[in-house]
Length: 507
Image (cartoon, rainbow, N blue to C red; front, top):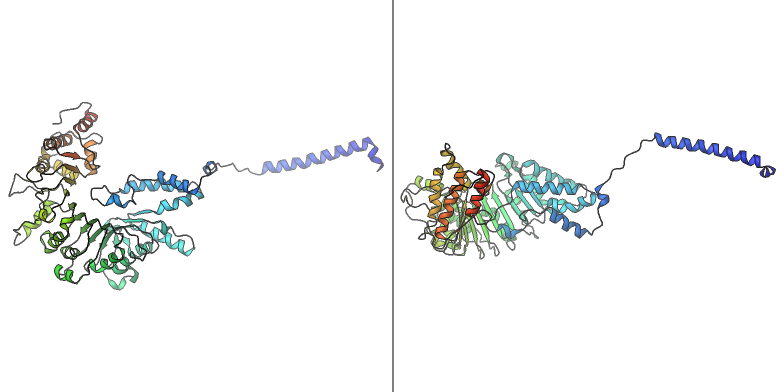
């Protein structure tokens, strides 16, 4: 190659290569400029530090905790505990949903917390949950039903859940600890159209699997047959862990209580502590024979006003001595009206205080009628006019009673005269002859607490509570709100000061 030694030729070759290179690079830059550029989207997941899965689960548990742990059985054994509100549940579920949408890893971690507590408030939610569980099974994905620990159903009458949807959910939720059905399942009375899987016997039996861990159970009987016909086999298989049992019925059986009780099997519930009954006199007779050695708390709302029936007497004669807490859900006015309608009227008083000599806590309604036979006395409940060892009385629905009494005299919002009967009713609880051991009176209404200490409380409401507080002080009885916190005159004055800017005379 003779031209290599010629500098002119080498210079020309270099210039030619530079020109070719510049043209090629210009085309590449132009093509890159013409290509639309996608803007970089910053994901919060890129900022997440690496932590072990156990640490993330603890963080999510603390971030989504509720005021009261819905999975803690011990919090719901007493009927004084305030139940979880649906608004609080929805607020917590919104937080869980937002956290699950941050990243795929967080979504995987949050599955347990998303499904551990399911509150169904309408039929469409039950259908959506059943569809999700079925779809996961068909696609071979891990079932979210394994995370369900508590299933709570509380719907309006016209929005009850379909039986096949609930049966599907129960089939894919083997680890249930709490099951609550508050008249929320839509059942047909025409047996020819009923799915065999959704019969009352099958719906109950699916809860009683061999590895059942049920500790809290609330059941509703939708059949015309007596309740123990369906529930007795279930309870025999789940009796080892069951601590809370609630039974209610949508109809009154026509079978004689004594006759049916003699044919019904005896169920043993060794660890049961709380029993809530919204039942009939017939079923009371059956439950009287059950073995419940640790029973302490009973709440009763008789669907047929069978307080004067033999079933009620059998039950409390058998289990009354063990009771520490008793709630009678029917208001005294309803029971009195029922008594007045009977022909002939019952003459003998129900000796409830003798049946329950160790009773310490009693819960009643604020709707008590004035006793026309003894106008100077208003008992907390017609069935319990007095008790020598009772230390605590809780009163429900005080807010409803205040609003009803206030609506009768709407003219003067400062006058507390409409509340005179309620003041006298609560004051009679302080009679030493009726309840000599009384130490606590508690307002169990959350709404009443808001009326007393919320924004701009009415002056007559504050005066009403000031009178109650003064009379409790004379007897040395503590007055408490629904949380168990003492109500003080300072709190009432502070509420009055926030309303008007100057504390008026409340007493």
